[in-house]
Amino acid sequence: MNLMINTSECPIETVIHVLGGKWKPRICRHLIESTKRFSDLEKLIPAVSQKMLTQHLRDLEREGVIERTIHPVVPPKVEYALSDYGKTFIPVLEVMSIWGQNHIERKPEEPAS
Amino acid sequence: MNLMINTSECPIETVIHVLGGKWKPRICRHLIESTKRFSDLEKLIPAVSQKMLTQHLRDLEREGVIERTIHPVVPPKVEYALSDYGKTFIPVLEVMSIWGQNHIERKPEEPAS
DNA sequence: CGGAATCCAACTGGATACTG
DNA sequence: CAGTATCCAGTTGGATTCCG
Image (cartoon, rainbow over all chains, first blue to last red; front, side, top):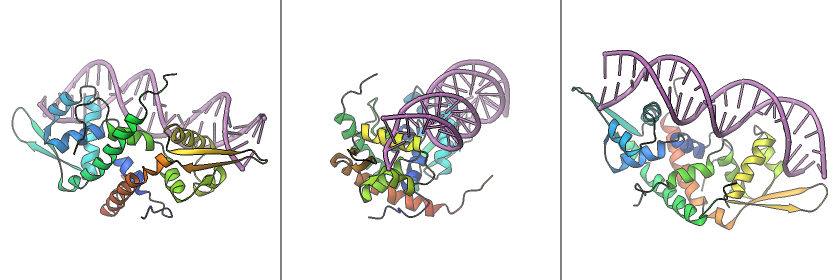
């Protein structure tokens, strides 16, 4: 195991950075299932604003995790898909998901106060 | 694979929440190595403020990931250690760390502008 | 349809001072 | 030593409006 304790770069923070936006985990999960249009994601994540959806998609694209394909038709059609590189992220998300599920079940309620 | 697409709870967000503070990944990495005192962590993470170190330690304790032991001596001695439950988190951090290392190497420089 | 631009509220984290 | 308390700046995200 190498946790890179002695480097200034922290790889765990890197992962947090890639996923660290309010809607990025959900976007990734939906794109793992299949390619989605912008409007599909809006329907799948009703609470997200257009601004944040756009911004987080741009972030994930810049990280190389997803790919954006513009189909030059009217009305505009833009599709988002996991890139090949992004697919290497799936096992990481799986491991996180499994621990997270267990963690949710572990604490059935948080005291509200 | 079960990514819990259809639940309102998102287990990936849960992991992000547990680790989602500026210094939490580093705190966890140091505590994986060994039990540490408050002042040890301050030395190991020079840039962290007392306020944030305290707050993040409390957060991680509340999540059950770490344990806080007060030794009733003068001067005060408080030790932080990974709990048994927190040790179940290590493999998750490892997987994240490996992908993160690769991701750092993948993009040697970000355009500053 | 798929955005961009603007303004604003909420939250996060830093600096500093004080304490059992 | 190991905190707590307060104030403040920066960042994140939401609401709204407008556009090719």
